[in-house]
Amino acid sequence: MATNPILGLDVYIALAAVGWADGQLTRQAADAILRTAAEEGLDIDSLQKLEEAVKNRVDVGVVDRMNMSKSDRLFVYAVASWIATIDGEASVRTQETLEQLAKALGVPEAPRQRADEILREIASEADRPDRFELRTLRETLDQRLDAARAARLAQLGTES
Image (cartoon, rainbow, N blue to C red):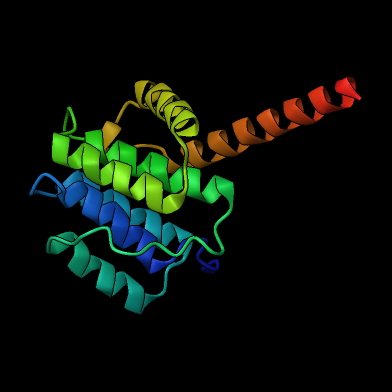
């Protein structure tokens, strides 16, 4: 049974745009985007539109973050960052597109750096980087955000 998608089609198209930024979206990145969208429960019509976006160059466009949690936005950034570096070092154009997406998502620099650290940590454990563990990334980001939130609340409690 499919779940309701957490992220909209616009988010997956933005991920494709990051992959296309240097002029070529790798098959690995395209597969990861489509796999993530399918796992999140995107409907068949949206998946068909996304299939076109991974076949033909697209721009980031508008990302509707209205119903996205901080965790959702950080996850999308982290997946985009992974896509940007899946075939090696990200080009200047790819880095610019990733920055554009981060701004559209409202993800500040410090959380982006932490997400990139988590990303590298998980990637180093993966025995098949082309099948990067996106669920592990999502769960790890959620756990670390919860831990940071708890630490902030505990600190506020001791300052009172």
